[in-house]
Image (cartoon, rainbow, N blue to C red; front, side, top):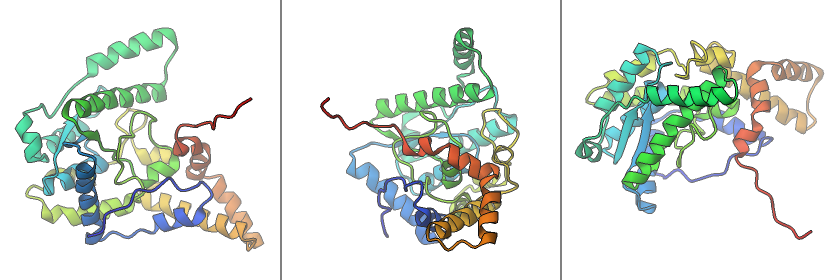
Length: 298
């Protein structure tokens, strides 16, 4: 089974790279490759385990179920806050309670850790200095959760695994220092491919119910910013989002090759004005990561 190779983030104008990623097809070999790669990562880096935060959404539930199926050493935690709905909390608790590893069970750690009081105190102190809004409150929640996950990773000699995927990556739909861990096995997978992989995984689980619930759930950010992630992205489905990007990247490639007809240019202008593409253009700095400067003598 092939190990997924580590890669750098594609250049913003590497249209072919984005096109190739959007066309990745689900298959059992890809599912196994993710698992083998994660095992190899722990071994090569002398790490004890992965640390995973689960929200009850498809991304973290799928990854927890896969790690659980193959008994890859990991611990997972549901970290609910006030903005999580009851159904989100129940799904996350079910995933954290049912999908674990023999390593995780041996530690007897709590599956659910509620830091709502800590968040409320932090928010009150921060907003006393500068006013907050829904986005800043969501960022604070995401970063508080990540502080705990890194605390646990340090304590256990492990590392934090990210659960973001390509659709979020393209649209900047994540919190810097709040959603990004040490290893990101799903980051370059289209969301529709991830859903299909999750369905392939279902019959291989002793208890498929928690994962099925995540598959069926309305996708949300869990931060209370809106009732649906798709609402924030301005699309009706992830398939529609990926179709917008695929067409946009193909037309940008055609434009660079000076092969654009008038109708192509008109369509490209339409796509550029859609919310997903606007989000892509505005979030380039997030995909690049921290900006480094090459030192030179003055």
